[in-house]
Image (tube, rainbow, N blue to C red; front, side, top):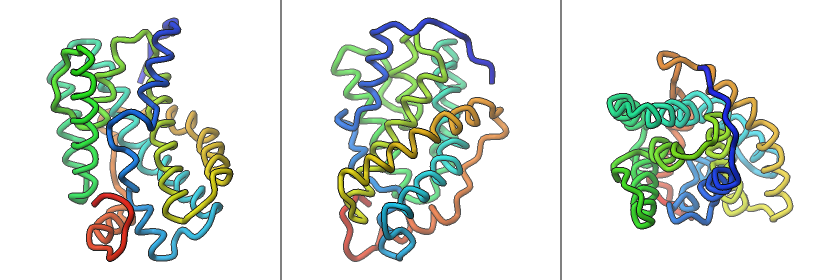
Amino acid sequence: MTTATTTTTDAALLRLIWLASPALPVGGFSYSEGLEAAVDRGLVTDEATAANWLADQLHMTLARADIAVVARATQAFRDADTAQCEALDAWVRATRETSELRLQTEQMGRSLGEWMKSLGDTSEVRWTYPVAFAAAAYKTTATLREIALAFAFGWSENMMQAAIKAVPLGQSAGQRILMKLAGEIPIAVDHALALDNAERQSFAPMLAILSAQHETQYSRLFRS
């Protein structure tokens, strides 16, 4: 995927930082994406296993699916290609393998759209989260790579916070995990940007199984 080079203004950079913030009222903090179930089953037990788990998830699921969708959708919005945006949105819905994962992307996308609308944005409030993120970012002068980096960092920060609560871990351990993920994000983003539409995939059997198990887990902190 070819990306145009532009100059990122201060306003564009600040908007990306804002969109990546876990303080944004979209509810990302309430989901663990299978991590809480992995902790419950003894697959994630400490800082090292949490860091490795999230790094694998970054490369094996996010890079091959949602990050790639963010980049494609951003370009589609810039090209006013509504059909492509709708196709990408439908793909995201179709590739969520559990009701929990589908609820997450639909709820977060709706919440982001409603928040943007409250600020005067005219975008439609109907997208899944990766497409909604693109809708919120495409009017900036940021490159597709910069937008994808912001999306991936926002995901990483939310998941680091989930690990702190679920394992549990201390704040310093959480920051070390985030530092590890930050080192992996550029690689994941470059992989995502290189994917053609036909190469995108969301095949993560263990994630699907854990997410399904989490829906009926006896004791849980995170939304199901």
